[in-house]
Amino acid sequence: MEKRISATSRRSEHGARRDGGAPDPLGYTAPAEGSEGNPMPVSAASSKVVYEGLKECGIRLLSVLPETWLVHLVSLAEADPDMILVRLAKEEEGVGVSVGAHLAGMRSAMLMQNHGLLASVNGIVSLAQLYRVPLLMLVSYRGGFGEEHPWQTEGGGVTEDLLRALRIPYLPLARAGEVAARLRQALTLAEASLRPVALLLCRDLMWEE
Amino acid sequence: MLRLEAMRAIYPLLAERVVVTNMGAAPAELFSLGHRPGFFYVEHSMGLVSSVALGIALARPELEVVALDGDGSVLMNLGTLTTLARHRPQNLLHVIFDNEVLLSVGRSFSTATATGSDLAAIAAAAGVPRTGTCHTPGSLAAACREALAARQLAVLVAKVEPVGPASYFIDLHLLENRFQFERYLRSLRCGGEADQAPTGEPR
Image (cartoon, rainbow over all chains, first blue to last red):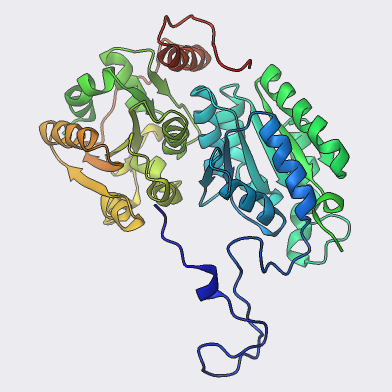
């Protein structure tokens, strides 16, 4: 249903001339649609462990707003005919989508950056918490130790305080070996408490450098 | 037209479907016409009604889902129209009652639809395949019937007067509504009574 611009038509090699026109002094590279060609060292192996953990938990719907650390996870969902992948314009919509899916009897999860968590706060409070709906939130934890991008650092600095203020239980996912069990535990707690639960996708898990 | 008249005109369509409403006057008026277990009133969290409806529609393609929304709410989450359009569920009808004001605050503060923003045109430009603006209860009911029969995602704007009931009180606690609604959707899948236990995977 979606119109897509193919990855090949958008991609240009680093530093190459584009369209036979002027030189490309900024060295533009268009992002590839899938994981191929992604120059960022996002861990494909860890992403696969997380995705398989979600599948084992019975997650059938994923709402996402892509960001760098999530590219492989989104690609895995795209390639999975049994997963409903909901592409959002803004993360707060995902709260509504997950609430609807839960009331309709389908397990879902939200996949977003911590800045997406910041953008979702009213939906979390005034919909998921007010109506006692479990939410499984996988949040990429940008802006922590090792963060090289200045623009990520303010959000990184408030992420855990925000979760505590919202009374959302959370745990970090920092090692592949702990992913499956913590996903199961998070879902179990969310469904028992009928409240949101968050897992923080940490740099040590998602980034290979 | 009055929103209550518009709602009365489409009530027979709503009564046999899954309905999600926004907050304020619309749920109070729908409730006054007769509550059904398939009605879910999303009090607060403005802008997310259509997202909730999308989640239900995608999870349960066999259900027909109607979202009753307002101009103020939709304007708080315009991106939802692009999300609806890109997923384009055939079983979702999004009705926006547009009274051009934020009514529930107690004084009529106008919204951007009062100064020319056209929500049906915005929805069409977002890629929603079926859109329209209705000015009478009869034309709204006809447009809703046609959209449901066409099995095509639709966003219909109903232009209504900026008036509402004296009280927005509903004698149904929001958690009571929420659990009743979930149980009802489960019963439709089980094909049995509303209180029947789920037969799917353990929750």
